[in-house]
Length: 120
Image 1 (spheres, rainbow, N blue to C red):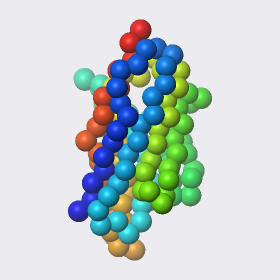
Image 2 (cartoon, rainbow, N blue to C red):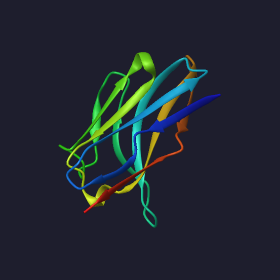
Image 3 (cartoon, rainbow, N blue to C red):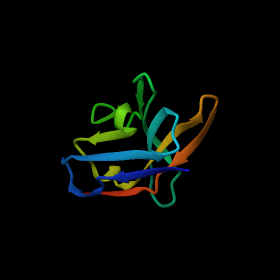
């Protein structure tokens, strides 16, 4: 069994910063990509940022230059540093990871989500 647990969400004023963390635990052989998504009521879930096992990153256009994704492979943890936050960034943020439970078998796992609210 594998679990992803997020932390770091909360309420912040526009222009402020937050750092989200997501740690994976359980029967993990290795982890491939790790990613952050966000969703607001009535909208589709949106990919915010993604990082591969070798550190290659990609970002949604709406967060480029403001958000930074990173990972600590020794801790099976992914981070999302969010700067210059805007009210439009308000959403539930969830982490997603490709977890290998053996050398050739992987599954996609999701965290429970953490609320980020940016006030104007």
